[in-house]
Image (cartoon, rainbow, N blue to C red; front, top):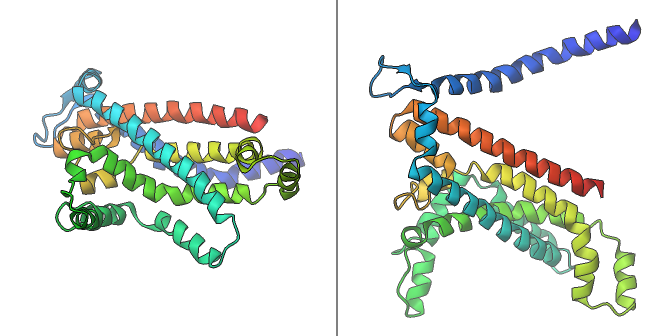
Length: 290
């Protein structure tokens, strides 16, 4: 009887949180699904009509959709590669004792706390500007012609900006894992004649395997929804060269005023993100079982 009362009390206490979660997630999702079934344009108020799955068909057959999917994959994979490899190298560097180690660690981690909009503005105006940017001045000093990164390599520029923001996160996670490595094992391998490269390949890298998996999982979930950097720097252009799935949904909903099409795109984006999340969760689960 006491156990039954405890369960009832527990359900009663968590019910406000469950209701809040339902109101916060389920209701907006249900409204989005409903709007995705309508011909709903903000320029024609009161002219809504039932469209069924027409919005999904038009969205999924739009050439911009395939370009956005490709750009999203390139963005995620490019940032993951830079942050994972760079994070391992920085973690190895910061794990070595040197003067000012604490200050350097703070400086390396600091970019993660900069807001994406501010970061994109700084990179756009201070570094990548083809006239007054630091890269342009460096090119002129070397006798070279300044390169307009955002016009000629928009997606690569965004990958660089986003990777700069997420590199501290990967470094912090990997550095924490590196500090838990058994030093006696490393010393024993060194005494047995193992080279630094062999110690890294056979001891350090396997030890970092789980942490690398966690970094990939968390970053992928957030990288699928990159938006501010694209809006501030390239507006998805030129054309659709830097348009990802998130920006395409925004463009359909708020630039073309087609709420029905944008809602259909939002539902598609949620489905694809959940498929990726489930795949990554299974992958990390298998790694943790080893």
